[in-house]
Amino acid sequence: MSKFEELGNLLEKSRSDYLDDIYRCSKFASELVRGLMEYLEIPESEQLVKFFQDKKEDEKTETYRYIRDTMEFNPEDKFWHFGIELKIYEPHNKLNSTRIRWGMLIKSFEDYFILKTDVTAREDIIHENNVEEYNKFYEHIFKQLKTHFEETNINYAKKEDGNNLIYIH
Image 1 (cartoon, rainbow, N blue to C red):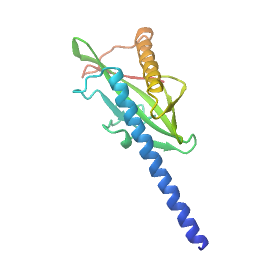
Image 2 (cartoon, helix red, strand yellow):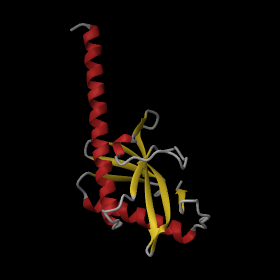
Image 3 (cartoon, rainbow, N blue to C red):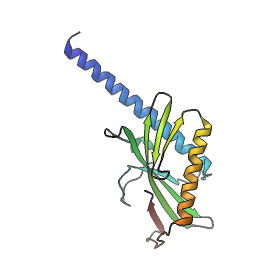
Image 4 (spheres, rainbow, N blue to C red):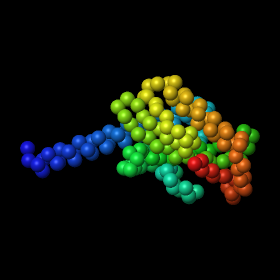
């Protein structure tokens, strides 16, 4: 095998590893978010969860329905970055709503993932089929969001459409 062919083989392996990693991480992220929606008992009939490219804190940042469309790999920290937007409304008035955005980072290993979020401000390790680890993560997200509403003085000046947008850092 020539040195050029050896480089070509390395390129092919590198590309294959990259595609496998984004597939694995986006699949895990999708399952994680679906589980969070179930845990928070978000009505399935409503599109209350969307995704955006993390670190783009502009209200006009485009949102997407699919995580994979927003995931970006950061070569410095070796994490996949994306953001989640959750729309929460008052029980008796859906027009009074708030959109909450936070960033998530995912790194895959052979049999587990490391998660970092703006909400939890910590690293979580989740093994793919460990329901207890998923539930601990969901409970922590719920408690942090609940604390945010209970303890944070939110500026409720309504926009024309009646929606607020809050970034959790």
